[in-house]
Image (cartoon, rainbow over all chains, first blue to last red; front, side):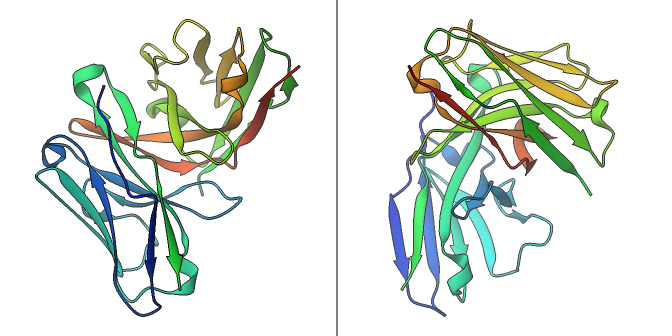
Length: 109
Length: 121
C-alpha cells in the first residue's frame, strides 16, 4: 500500500516561513491535499490538488508537489498557525483508498 | 452553510457493535460521496470508508473490511457506519466528511465535529 511520510515536528519563529514536507514514491504524479487540525477540533482543509487554497484560507498558505516530495509552505507564520498538519492522497492503484501521512506538529516559537 | 453532525459514539465492549450516524445539511446530499475518517487518541488520521452519492459504490480500509458497513439514506440526508466485531484498536474519534472529487483524486471538505468510540471491557 502507498505510504506518506511526514516529519513529526517542525518549529518556526513568528514571521518566518515554515515548510512541512510529505514524502511518497513518485508523489509528484498524484494530487496532494493538506489539512490543519488544532487541539480538540476537527481537521480543516487548507490546500487541495497540490496548490489550490481552500475557501477562507489565507494567501500565506501554499502548496507544491514534485518528484517524491510535496510541501506545504506557510509564510509569515503567526501564533494561530500552530497546529497539526496532515497530507493526503487518493491511491487509485489500490481501489480508491485514501491515504494520510502521519501528521506534523507545527510549533510557533 | 454545509453542516455535518455525527452521533452514536459510545463505550462498547470488545466484540460488540455500534452504529454511527451523520446528518448533513446545506448541500444536495445525494450528489456527493461521503466518508468516515477516524483518529485514535494521540495518533494521526486514518481513512475508514467512503460511499458514493447514490450509495451504489462503497470502499473500505483493509483494517475494517468485513467488519464495518457504510450506507446512506438520501431521504434523510444521513450517512451511517455500522461497526461490528469491534476491537480495542477501533477506539477513536470518528469524523464524517463530505467527499470532494476531481480527476483521479478525492479529498475531504468539510468535516463534522466527530464522535468518540471507545472499545473496552
